[in-house]
Image (cartoon, rainbow, N blue to C red; front, side, top):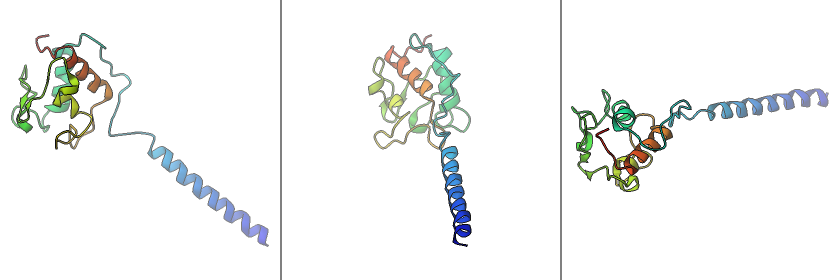
Length: 145
């Protein structure tokens, strides 16, 4: 009788552990905070403001209900304006040829100087978009092309 009792209990325990682990792995399989799109590609150099960067700003930073449109100008920054002047409450947020010193670039992947990571309350920009913005800044942040 002991053998009959142990086998169902062991099976139930193993089944339960299996279901828990399966749920854990399925739940961790997709990171919704940084939705990288494998089809989303940008050139590794010679990025165009009008073709590559402005669409990112309009979609992710200055769309309706997003903080940096002309009517809201969160932090004093208007990314809907063409071309933007990149002047915000914290000063110049884009330093041409220096993404690492550009506040606009830095806040895309971390909190900086008491500013939350951008965009707040929305999914983070994909690494492809962040890299494109960084490359564009490092190439001089030209808004004329």
